[in-house]
Length: 357
View (cartoon, rainbow, N blue to C red):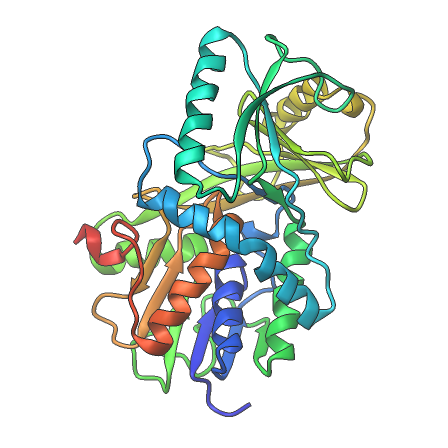
């Protein structure tokens, strides 16, 4: 292709989403992934797009709300252009309420959602039990209809196909440790460069800026064969159970600061699977058909790291998705495309790299 207006480095959810948004605005886009699309933590199994609770409201939660409300149209367009279904469906989420205090808290959150979610989604207390959700200690559940799910690997393939359909280039493979061809890393290239390189990118920022920008946290997840496609996801004792359209249920995930191996599963995942079977009756005999482990980029601020790379004119960063990258992606893509193409800065306070300088 002709010289790119925007070169995106990294084939995870942030890199692909930013490249898609730039291409959709008419830019000439080249995305370069050193290994393969989804080689990092974005190529996992879970795919839970779930909101933060509607209390202690802040700019991060507002940004995420916007993104979750944008998600249906975002993924529908990617599917239309690529011909690949990302498996998106907004089916909601159930959380069991353990006692009277948890019920009262959920009711307060329902009031908060009524004020803050603009009538576009609800949080409510509901009753019931069935073979999917099992039993709640109080017989009551917190339910929100904002939560959605998608298939992470199909979603990445959908975005890559959409970029190509819009005339962009998606390149995979290269020598480890080498910068992509035509990208110096020092701001001397034609066009702009967006770095969406996960844990390696956070380490590079930390070294360049001389302060901790973020680090990696290991996660493990499993995929069980179980047909529950129309069910809401469950969040039980910190565990996500996400039914997908293909007759599987994803279970995840751990959060590990210390680990022996970054990409292998161990007894921590087996405990997770046991917890899922105990929480959800229909999973008790469901076979495990896939296991996954990877290192996710967690920013020191716990918010995504977005904006210009300080001291590198023409270079930008989109990183720090951690557990909420897929849910944040539509809005991250929008604000980064507006920034790199038009100079419009709508990045919230606390998300910019320079905020900590």
